[in-house]
Image (cartoon, rainbow, N blue to C red):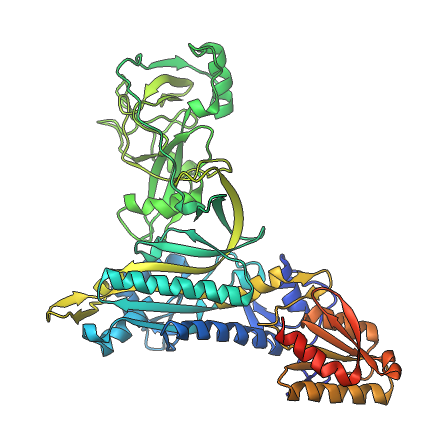
Length: 601
């Protein structure tokens, strides 16, 4: 049915909404695709729903192509399954919790692993039922502390989540490969450039994990890549570890007075004056060991202090710490992480601000030493046995020189924790890294047996023995895909949708006041519809040509057909929205011209 603008529920805006920060947010609101209902929550209007449904249909087609079957769960879920997997606690403040009138606990689902697992457990019990892949396209809810950028980070969003169920790890590998290939096809059909990058599993758990990132300067994810093909989220990058050094001939460490040197910069400057290097080279920040005190808030609410030793020329990346510190903490789940504050430091008097060092075998009882308050002490991978450092002596105004790792101090673990820089070597040896930013469009995990074990999902194998099912999880941000498409398909005048997702194939505009203009435009709209095309027809009688063309360019349909003054010569103007190229075409050839343009694009 032809969408007539005189009747369509649409109001375009000339000014950007005051709360909009990014192009997609501004244009989707201005062009009448979405409206803000609350922070991070949006109402979808008719044109927006049209684009959204086309994105969903592409996803459904590719899911069906790998044999996945669609189901649909409620968004309102009971507490008990999430208690069984401990995610009722692990999700922390990010979970929307509520109670019914009888006091029973519920949540608005952020993801549905538990429900998929329980559904398969309820209906399947044999290896003959597997492999199985199920998916849904469903609203999700997360209580984002700072929702921003319109649809890119909201509190309510639509996601396609699918789950594979296999009897063994080989089956999981096959399911993972199939979903990965399907995702690449989905994004190719949408016209979205995405880069698969290695990622950490995080709170989801499991082993192998990859993100599909859409490169853009407004992205919240930083990733790295090399010219030879390595790509990873910075949280998943591994450091090229230097070789250990023989320290058998290293001189003893010594403590020197270094007044007024609480920062790396002041320490380096003072060191070059009071304790020059034997080789005549200048000390640099890379020669210092900086000990950073962090406060970790566990899902239980407990606050724990962790100290991390890193080369002084490297900054600690809290996202990388958060992604990797779970291996050293007693509780799994989402955590809070920040630099320790004054109140934290008061509880640990051995921590001397600005002069903190690791535990070491000198004459003081220091951090981590026997008889001192033991704190978790982790180090960057560059701190290997035999490396020599300048670091704090745990006494105000004093530093230690020639402190040897492995001889004078030890550590509780090694953690990937520092910023990744452009020029750092790729861990696979493929060359130097370059950094970029991106938006996460999809994420796939090999979950393994985490949820199946927690919820007792087992089947009988070929030998009649019960085995725990192994699972994979695969998500695509559907509303985020709409935003990413808007972000990458616009110009100064408005949106420029790819044909695969545009709300219509052609936007017919009646420009002028003559009855013959409106009659011709109306008939062309009907003929285009009869030819199988989706048509928006601007039939508003008392709207100026400038406003009509402005709205057509703002809405962003790929082809604009204008019926106006050229009608006296028997022609209409057909304009390609993306290239801006326009051509006068005879009225009786216009439908075939547009149909061919649609088919060939």
